[in-house]
Image (cartoon, rainbow over all chains, first blue to last red):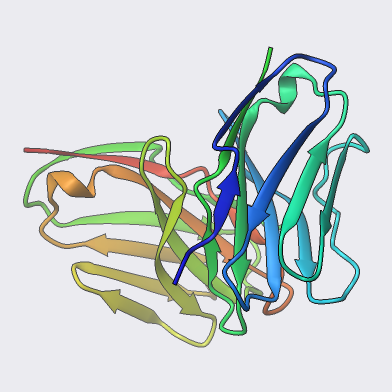
Length: 112
Length: 113
């Protein structure tokens, strides 16, 4: 079956604009994660959704970042008033009851 | 706070060599450990997953071991090939089955023909 998909694959935006990044998890996976990969910082956890439970937002770097997951499937990560330090690759992952996380190809965000 | 370390950051070996990639973590109370491969400009591909109750997992030329008490894991690659050139990331999961992964910064491997 299809893996995790993300769109867009690349996004260039001007400083101060809002952006939305989309993640389509593997069908049937109940858990969905967002991570960010920056040069020199490695992979950082942002937010995690599990079924109908309240999301774990402990990794969001500021209140400019938010995410939602509609209908237990597709998720959107929104960054408001983008800053240059937001430039990174944003990765989405999903997992099933077997707990192995499968990653999408990522969205490369460049803030100019 | 869990910290994951992978040293060295880069490694270059001739084709055919057997090699070991190391990963260490500070908190031994992990749920599982996963090794990933990342090619330039691409996402992560899961290689091996070791549950906390397991000591090792094997897939083809890859073997991963886990020693929870010492906070270490190794990824063994047999008979390395140029196609193995990539960045290898180690990640641990603590706090339950569906909690977040904490990643090391990865080891960039180059296998010379």
